[in-house]
Length: 145
Image (cartoon, rainbow, N blue to C red; front, side, top):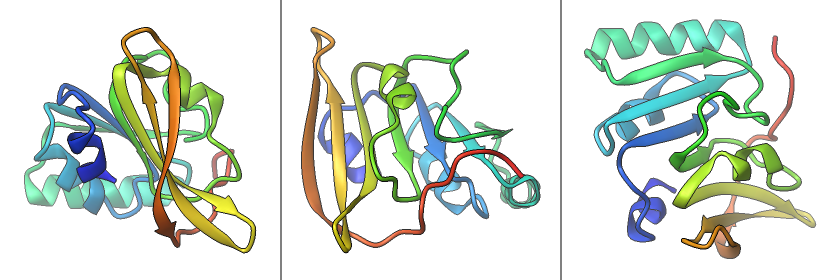
């Protein structure tokens, strides 16, 4: 998904990750852009990711405990948004937080399987969707724990 974002011309200023998990993907993203905000709905995982990132010396990632389906409304203008869980649809709040020229990549449930969906916001603010192949991720859930 990160490669797709770069290939499709996403900027490298500020990226959003939905689903911090252990912090691995955020650490990789931190090598590709100036700043990463990573949101995790499970408090214990958010803390675990923070410890892992600190141990690796990654200092350009901000972790947020919150509902990833809502993104970070106070921080719009993400150059790339990558979701580490499959939703039934693309959350509109996340699309609204894409910068002009931004790319959102996420797995989406389609029938009995999943596809990787790429959403781009062009210079005129129009939204374009394209499928980039099959995917297999955990379900995207809202709320926090």
